[in-house]
Amino acid sequence: MVLLILLVAALNCSPGGSRVVRRSAAHMGTVVTISVVATSKSHGEQSIDRGFAEIARLEQMLSSYRATSVLSRLNAMAGAGPVSVPEEFIELILVAQEVAASTGSAFNPLMGPAVKLWGIPENPRVPSPEALEALRPLTDLAGLSVMPQRGTVALSRPGMALGLGGIAKGYTADRVTEILKGLGVTGGVVAISGDVRVFGTQPDGSPWRVAVQDPGGGPDPIAVIEMSGGALSTSGDYQRFFEQDGIRYHHILDPRTLRPTRGLASVSVLTADGVRADALATAVLVMGAVEGLAYVEASAGVEALFVDQNGHLTATSGWPKRP
Ligand code: AMP
Ligand code: MG
Image (cartoon, rainbow, N blue to C red):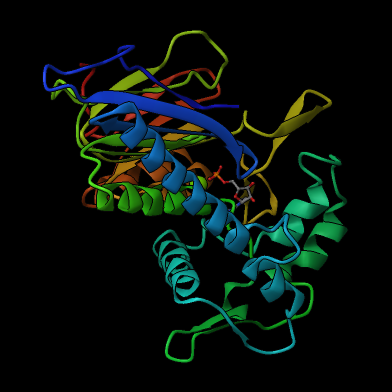
């Protein structure tokens, strides 16, 4: 399910002796690959250890699959008053709210109950319109309140569930990048499935090359981007889905219909930080080709590549040309 492949020369060593050290491991329900430029193999391996330790720590805070996570504790208290949460959790919720506000609620971190009703991917089924509509009050963003001064978050109604699946991978990629930089790593790539954060360059000074996978399943990437910083996130209808009567039902829901989005096969968003790239990729897939393109063109420092169901590509005006 790795969405982006990294095209990096094997055993890329510079004359100064720095090299790329890389490791993949399963985390956050997917494959994470950390690549670092290191002065020695042991420096690289130690840095990567610290990176994966940070991922494990954040997973324990942000996962909805772990009953003891901060997120699960908050959801268990839905309708029962404010819950004290760590400062970084508040920071992340504030970004989620900011993206929700700027995208007309296309990004909605309260879709959890609806996602659960669709049962994607564990127990897939098409819910009745009545069952879906009954959940609508639980998805109302007004029911999520954050009190940064008090360090609390509250969900106003029982049954509400905050879900960070659309933003947590990009946020985690940012945090891991900060850890690696703090260890003196001069360049690297943190790829959490389709959420990729890059810093610095390869040992020979050339940019990293990040490829965007064909959502149609073709062997060739649809784009290869040269990056020496910033983040690239892709959301698509082909990552988690089921099909019934020739219709594909996938894991990203349009908050207006509470149904999987139709129209775009994937959206890739390029911007400075992983947390916004991740949330915006999800949001823009929901907004669709017309509204999504207008939104990204109007957003400073954000570019996007859209792929429709026929494999037709549309890029925003500042999307990098093929190297
Ligand atoms: P991503 O792969 O980043 O696009 O995130 C997809 C995940 O975000 C889904 O598996 C859901 O948990 C969650 N999600 C679904 N629909 C939305 C939405 N409209 N806004 C925010 N998160 C969503
Ligand atoms: Mg996302």
